[in-house]
Length: 267
Image 1: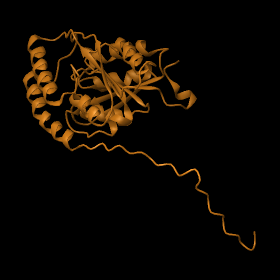
Image 2 (image 1 turned 45 degrees about the vertical axis):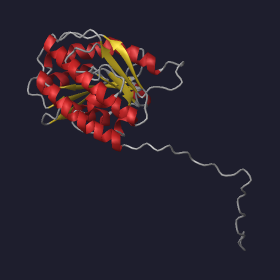
Image 3 (image 1 turned 90 degrees about the horizontal axis):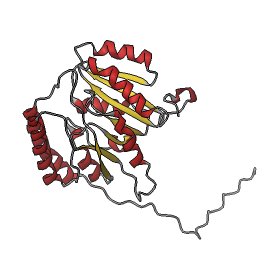
Image 4 (image 1 turned 30 degrees about the vertical axis):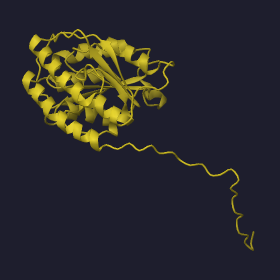
């Protein structure tokens, strides 16, 4: 299948949403890898959400749209954070299924087909609503790995979501499911718990992780750790208050008859 279904007037099967901020050096290599991973596999679009970049990112994205017909660009006037960028991109998406990955190049787009294979596995009794990447071999500094391990351990103990790595940017999920969830700053770190609370099935799959080769991170290690722990209390509050009643539509009795239509004199 070709990457651009617009000629047929059909929405794509997959929307790849990539939040970027001051990632001018990473954009073109990352777009090339996404296209290589999905070409002849699924119809797709790529949505880059520029979260208020101050470098050459807007110019690079403008040039990339000329070369890549599947690329769409949405820009925030001011930085809003990763969750805000993801929400913007997912709202703009035209596909029923969303793939997200970070714009720094550390997630490998070559892992996307593995997530799609799980989604389409016919042996499953129930299709997952969220498939999360699990970075077993992280290519980060030991301080960053340690802070992430602490945050993940605290989260798993508190939320019991069974997900080893919620911080991995590589995820595949239903757009409809995501838009029905409570939306707040840093929500992307708690997607497994939120989806499970809403009744969806969550699966994790091991993916590769690469060192950052270009640019620099905008997140402080300990700032992110403490923010995650503070947000945890809010998510626990949401879990206790989110209700999911089981609703079944009743069928009319088979013997029920439809009353005759009154006759009119002019019939």
